[in-house]
Length: 82
Image (cartoon, rainbow, N blue to C red; front, top):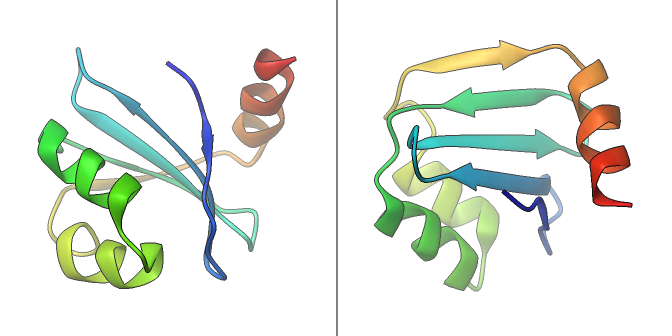
């Protein structure tokens, strides 16, 4: 699983795990939320979207069960990339 930087004023990065159908989104605020179960095609829609925020609002936000993750996970995710 590879964290992808988002070109967005709201979304900082995201990572999708197909085996568990989980989507972790890190916001510029530093908050991280896990959405599940997210179909893989939604992940690809987010990646391809011209506006990541619009795609998130239309297809992910308030549409899947959500868990707020500890902020420390953001640092862990970034350190795993190096």
